[in-house]
Amino acid sequence: CLLIIAVAFFYAPCSQSAQVEKNKDRIGKSDAPQGGTFFQVLDAEPEKLNPLTSTDAYASAIQGYVVEGLMNTNIDTYKLEPELAESYEEDPQGMWYVFHLRQNVLWHDGQPLTAEDVKFSFDAVADPQSKFDTAHLRPYFENIEKAEVINPYTIKFIVKEKYFYNLFSHKGIKPAFL
Image (cartoon, rainbow, N blue to C red; front, side, top):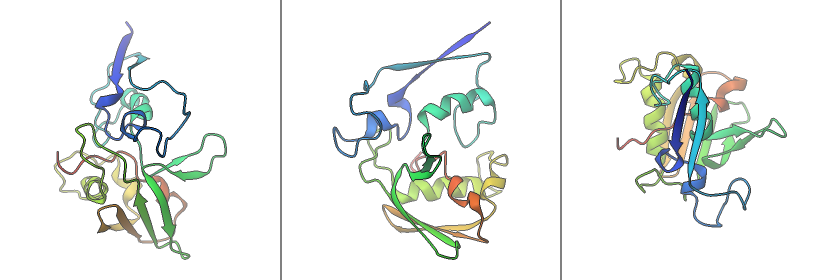
């Protein structure tokens, strides 16, 4: 039995197509269709779609289309590029990273993405006492010592040691107001 999952892009937090101001800082093809419904055929139903708590491949298949992070890998060059961040700075010794967030990104309810949301998402994973069941993600963040909000659109991550995966660890950002 095949299950067809429909995910409406307007439901996804920080969805590229629904949240970028018209013709400003557009990501992707400028003539790509906007809005609508996306259908993904899966062999089973995902247990949950929350990127902080889901652990199955079926949820990951859907999240790959609707969840964004601070950075993403360019599929043509395989280089890391800012995604929800518009830019970033890296300590020459690799001991901290500062991300400057895009200021035109909105959540599904119209509230802006802020550094507090990024910190909330990091804390939800890094804190073993968090109300979220995120033990499966904790190893990806264990090298990050802390996250500091510099201003509403700037966040700094301090790391324990230089490691190539430090910039990959920031997917699944959730709004702090939920």
